[in-house]
Length: 329
Image (cartoon, rainbow, N blue to C red):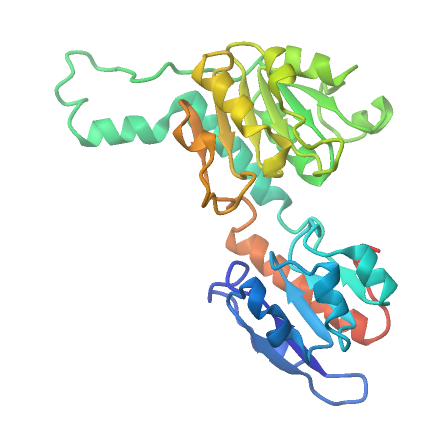
């Protein structure tokens, strides 16, 4: 049996061993052939996957046409939580199992969301830079600021989505003394059982946008949530509000957010995801005032990637035993 990892570099740039994949034992005692490609362009997918019964992908698309062109394919393992890179309907029609990696990066993503918030609130990097350039040495006072310092305690932290990551992020915000307001399918009782002191359920999405001092996006990308942040919802926010997105880029209408930031209708944004990644065609947010962008790295701590690789391996082993786990269909 042949296993092909079609784009392994992002999940494992070399700091995690691939050896366990080379030593997978089949139920009959035989071994699998394992081939790893660091990156694969769309025009190379069919050639590289043509003999594979098991394919692992992170961001390489497996469309209906691709799936229909791979008659040996029995299993697609997505090395991520989101699995929109696979046409699951086409896979289901072919009897192909599709799995994902749930909850492997929960704390890492929550950590970066709060890192963005603290960066905006205190601008540690900016102050460090000017101190090293001599600004403190030449200052007539013992203390100075290049940007206003913001205390987060007592402010309202709004969260869209209370899955694993949204809940973890809300817990950290609560530990900073913030009041948590959540828009979620969870009931009030279910929210109270999360153990987040003082958490409240937003009565409406509009109310969440109006009341939040900080709004953090943690919902999946669907037709309903695409551009959930748009000109209308941005118009509801406070001029002092901060928007965080460590979820999916298309949750935000980027031009609408750029306009709101440039016009001072909201204060700042901390963004880890964009609509196009990498943003080869550009993005209005790249040239926008007080928009702080990281390159979709929240998921990518070593600890999170080690969990991802372990779960992916266990997913394949479970499939080979005839006991597939973490199936998305």
